[in-house]
Image (tube, rainbow, N blue to C red):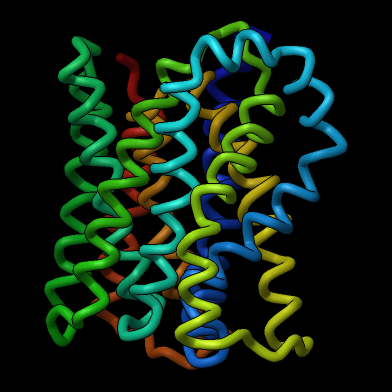
Length: 289
């Protein structure tokens, strides 16, 4: 198991990244039918229901441990659940899905920075991969039409996700993965309740149709319950920096999905930069600390 841990960690990080790419497209697709806060709230309600059969009992058994580390769990809930996806949904009001994926690719730099500050040696090959993929993202963003208002929301979301991923390194080893997931989903949803009440009062609810319910089910089950479990496990196996290099695949996946689903264009410049990103991912993922 120990010998296969790096390969499994890379596979889990890649899986989570691909699944999350769909959530950016979903957020953009719902921008004119479901208010951002309500998207986030119902996403996490669905995720909580999905993970409850696996995590509720374990969380109850570990309630004393959770209480002892409540500050850590609360911060993880705030960053990874309450704030992060709300910011992404807010950005989706004015920012194309491809731009959202590109800007989110800044988060691996933050992950690496946090690890380096904690004294973790990144290694030359991994650092080269990180910089190569980062160069591809910079060129990709630089070839666009400039920042939209929602891009600032995405920058804040990237900071949140990078901080959440770095924080996972400090998760108590004895705290079970599904118990942690269930608790963060529960606390994060509870923290969203005041904003949900304000949104319902000011904006009204949305009409449940296949076009609104099915995307919320996708982001609740696949992008939240399944992908967050995979990402958290990947962090435990290979650390945030190495997982963060794989995360650079996200702008490639988002650009392709937004082209296929939303009709957003992908030109030769995007293809060239995607090649840089993929090359950097391969180099960084193979690197050793």
